[in-house]
Length: 45
Image (cartoon, rainbow, N blue to C red; front, side, top):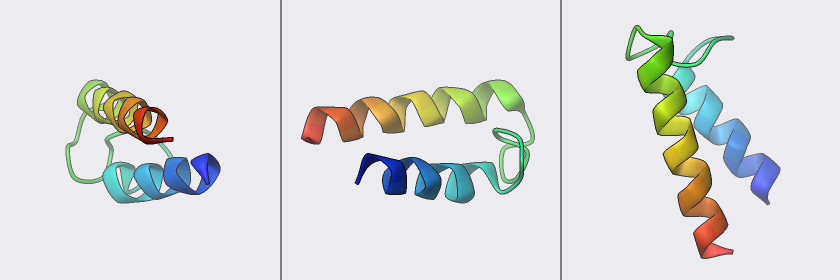
């Protein structure tokens, strides 16, 4: 469940092999969003 959520976050917000290279154009913001997503998912489990 968690792994699926993580993969979904990476593919959706990253858009590439590196965090944030897809839609946001910066590794910092993409990584920050990924951390927020993980915290939200962990909070819901």
